[in-house]
Image 1 (cartoon, rainbow, N blue to C red):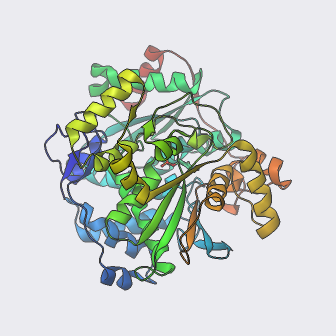
Image 2 (cartoon, protein in one colour):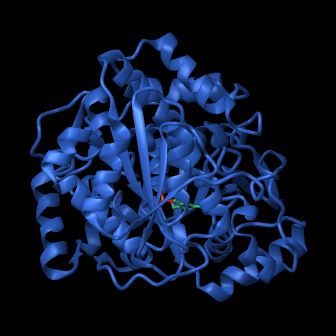
Length: 463
Ligand SMILES: *Cc1c(COP(=O)(O)O)cnc(C)c1O
């Protein structure tokens, strides 16, 4: 499989190059040159098979440069780290409505599903080349923990994660700072999350530093992360009747990576009736799917912080399809976004095409809270605020007659205990494997919001 950029200005690239580079050289995102097919017979053959086997079959057409047996081993290791044997189990919550639980990984959020594989793929490719990289990231909570768990103890990787001092929740901080592997370095910056992101950007812009450290990232635009997320759409759909029967997915959405993976599954042939984009009050994507106008507003904080996003980085991949894969046109629209603060696509043809695939709903804070309460009353289940946004969106939109709905549960309720307790009156407990999180020893450095100080700290630890 070869990969092309959504802005059309780089030569076709290999899987390995795409994995290590993340972003394409022209500022675009990598997408496969063609969509491999999952035929009805393929889906039937996968029904009832274990998650790792489905994972291999779905991802294999996208991979090159790794031997098949080795790829199977990496998949097996990645998903052995999950607390539930099914990795992504379904739980019925109503007539024809299921939750897909994606939070059984080491850090209790769905990002583990892709990150656990990504860390191993990086290590495999770098180890074979005899290379090492320094991964840096900035986090407001969730992503940092998933990246640390994925990269800990990997020979080819040193990982540095910046978080704003005293501005992440205690669970989130401890999930990062209690990992004491030699190659894991937590930095609490005396500043805000925006300061952390600015430091990150400046480190990448500092060419001498970038080269000395072989700087890299594992951010949400990496194609391999999308690829790993396609798997659970297939796994869930075949349990509820694919290929004979269609299913509908409802996805709590921020950067558009997760729901875009659903779109990839659809393009590969999975019978998906509709993908529902569920947003919190940061509703740029809901406005886009309603009007065709893509125009970021001001980001407002919510109880579902991993969806507090205005520019959804993976959205460019869908735009590329809506522009009939014309990279120059995408580049033009992205320029317009920067210069005019937004753009509009043709409502008759292109928006209509997008709406044949996607539905959307925006959910405010009050409805998020009442949904957490209603779920507890109706089913006895506690759900986290991100999942609650999606459940509310599922209830607010309609499925075609007889089509089952699968709503993605992206975080464990114990990751957001205060919000869940405030709405339901019940405090969610951490799973047994994390029960001693509050007693574990923490390790992190506190640094000034100063590029020179952070760079010196990194350099001193990788030499
Ligand atoms: C990251 C995240 C999301 C949003 O996923 P995207 O791929 O960014 O759309 C939703 N819920 C949780 C818990 C997350 O961590």
